[in-house]
Length: 398
Image 1: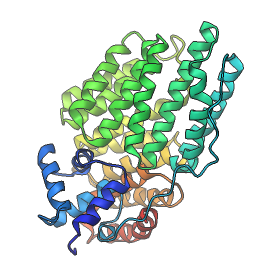
Image 2: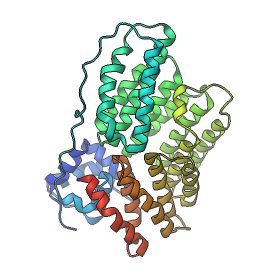
Image 3: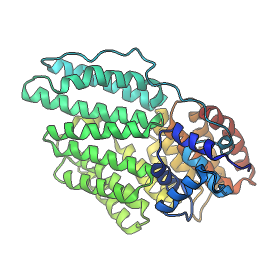
Image 4: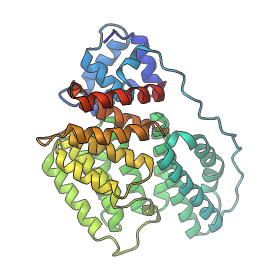
């Protein structure tokens, strides 16, 4: 590979809204083998960007995977990302009172944005979601209402912030995504319902998982599990599997399996009591998918494939399906029963979805699959997949 200019490397990092520590966490997250510790990676990134050292071929591949691009894109300065304020900006409303009808309409909008996010990727409707959050949802949080309407409004406002956070992450805006998660927590506390606060903590933990920060992810998800201890079982299961995912990042198989058993036991009690309304967006397929991610992290390819296949029986919308296809592809490329042909079959479907939706996280998952398969590029099926994916990754990254 040709040498990479340090300024170009810095431009790529900044184009995705990442600071140096976050980039170091991302490199650790996509690594398929031994890698420098977090502090060492921070020093290396700064040296690379200052031109003091050149990236080795392995770190060029890891850097590209962390950015969700093909490696040869690193030699080119990234194009300026599209502006997020392209939608018509509405002034915040002045609201004195709210009604149950207000809450119902906000929830209809939230459901529509969730469906759009999952089918077309977060980047498409992001500007509209942010505008609606700023001009409609947040002004009503401080308005007058009877107690039940107020609690319902707080809950849907938390959900809206979390959905917008997810969309920001999908568009590669990690810092804004974190800001929205932070904004959601004090509103969650106002609901006086521990499971809502636990849900926000779990989502914070999941973002730290994506960043590769296992210690902080464990801290957040452990707190979420404690807060969810007396909650409805399906919601508790949702929280427990996020903790299992954080544990799997440490390589602790026994503790991960214990947490997964707890999650499935909680799910088995679902229906015994009413669940929070936000759980209507999450089903057993999410539990199966996260279980597969745990097995990927532990190198248990056969189990990852089975979990992903169970999830894919239900997941039909494009982005969730892409995530589970990535788990399946990586699972087929792991362990003693590696099957590169089946890994490439899942990879080809993943490439097709990546080419059709606006999702940075899907590109990252595809890049991780390609990185896992690249050592086997002499195999015809792998070589064909890499060639098929190249124009998709190049177009999406440019």
